[in-house]
Amino acid sequence: MNFPFDPSAPDSIIRRDFLKQLSAAGVAAWMTGEPQIVRGKEIAHPEAKADACILLWLAGGMAAPETFDPKRYAPFTKGMEVKSVLSTFPAIPTAVDGLQICQGMENIAKIMDRGTLIRSAVQPDLGSILHSRHQYHWHTGYVPPQTVACPHLGAWFARVLGPNNPVMPPFINIGQRLEGVGEKEELKAFTTAGFFGSEYGPMNLPFPEEAAKSVQPPEGMTSERFANRDKLYRKLVDQNPHRDYASDYQQESLMRSMDNAYRLLASKERLAFDLNAEPEAVRKIYDTSRFGRGCLLARRLVENGARFVEVTTEYVPFLHFDTHADGHATLDRLHSEMDRPIAQLILDLEERGLLDRTLVIIASEFSRDALIEGKPGSSAKDQAAHKGDTLEEAKHYGLHRHFTGGTSVAMFGGGVKKGFVYGKTADERPLIAVENPVTVEDLHATIMTAMGVSPKTEFTIEGRPFYVTQDGKGKPVMEIFA
Image (cartoon, rainbow, N blue to C red; front, side, top):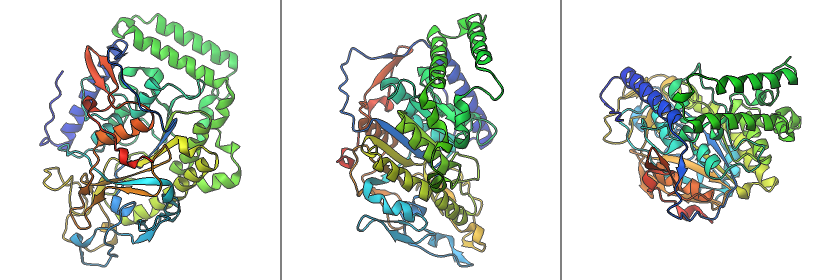
């Protein structure tokens, strides 16, 4: 199968073709037999530094100069030149001598001595800077489209490492709706286990405050009726006249995922999904937004044995970190939504003795700039709302263009150094990584290494090797580990 990509095509055509290609890949994954881990090569897995991972995904393009990598600050004045805008927030000190981050993140500043800040993550120029393509690349390690459905990072951990607790789903996704918002089908593409099968896919909890409902029968339904519904569903699958179109492995995987769900429903661990079990004072700290409440739920789930939890701000066009307009005002709001919950999550994990064995990652698909789309020399279409040379209105003050030349990623716990900064971006535009650039492949290799998985781990799919990092070439950044 060959999926050509024409970067010169209009966005509407690119999106339509992308959907068709992903749909074909999804069908291929459903029809594929069981993926086989390569046994002929004795892969030496590194010693795990972490048993669990929490990914805090700031979807939409977190502008590094507005968060973890402040540059020269210029306050808004009517008529100011766009080229003078690097950061729209002043820098503030942190708990690490000499390290500054942006105003509005005062609580995160206090816990920067617990982790490592990578300031030189870079993304490729994919021709058209679509969030769906970059999110797919970051979460799976592969640039879409592919001839098979690629597993999400969390699915790799679920498949290779298995659950920390046999009752608790090993892969849980908090905050992501799969329909009705954003780029719809494209978003679904990376939020799956791909060819691994349903049992390794995410348990999706779009609204953390409603998570408790997901581990109990629907309101008004008796346990007996719920059990009967399960029996009828299994009979329907078994007698499906079209079952020959799907591999036995994929169908059996679906049934195993149903078994796992029922096991959770009957366990004490289901109480971990109920945020109301937390003291009111604790809930108040996290109750800044859906993302904030998701951070609290993530802590509760990891405490009860979840292997991988992603908490997302959720990508919705022109909302949250997708700041094509009103950038400064939007980031001011987002700071207040993310600052306290993220800091409290780190402190809570530390207090409970969980931080050392839990890798917490703060990341986004790319950064933003006031002038450059993609990176210097890119032919990507400019998608900013304001294209003038000067700023006449406050709503145009901010970083509105997608930037892939230098991004920040913060990591806490999981064996990383404390109070450490790795890499650097230029002080003046273009704000590209100028020291120790870290690619998506190398970042994945670093995360895998922390979790005790070799970056060269491979499965055989349709007779071909498929690696946990693209072609097995990802190299961990060992300098960040203590």
